[in-house]
Image 1 (cartoon, rainbow, N blue to C red):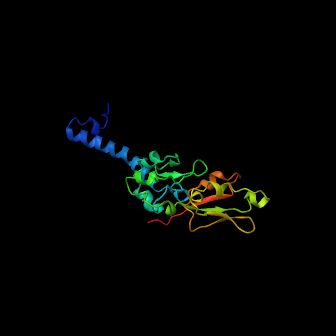
Image 2 (tube, rainbow, N blue to C red):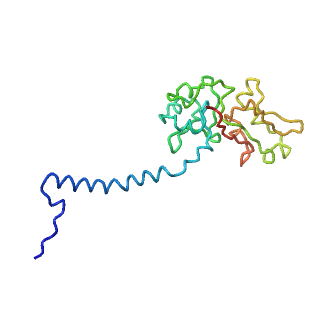
Image 3 (tube, rainbow, N blue to C red):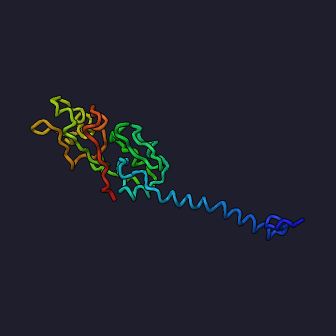
Length: 201
């Protein structure tokens, strides 16, 4: 009867066992390493389209600096900050906009520096854009909801105003991109959106 070939597993010595299990570990680890490399090559979850919390650094720097602890999320009194699939915070104005709270608590709570301390009129979150064709004012309705809910409007700063022909105008130099106007807009799709800005360094 022919003898079965001897394998490393059959070797009773410590060296034989180490060789066998070492090879087994390498075979198991290889696909795991290949999977990790494949995940790294996947495109990001469209972070350039996200509205970040007040004082956020430029997108690339923000993602690399944020420690994803969620402290800004917990600190937000309006519950406006959400956690993305990658663990970084963002704001969905249609869900709940930033209300530019008095303490700007999220910036104070950020432990990593991904959110820089800034004044209420220089948050650098985004810029409101109006689709005049979708706006109710283009149909003759006297809608000013977006103007009335703007947090800076209450302080006497005109971010949104009406032109001579009655259409809506955004003063880009003072808009902070909080998104309150988006939430208040009654149209679907929204006649006003906030485009995230990426200017802070």
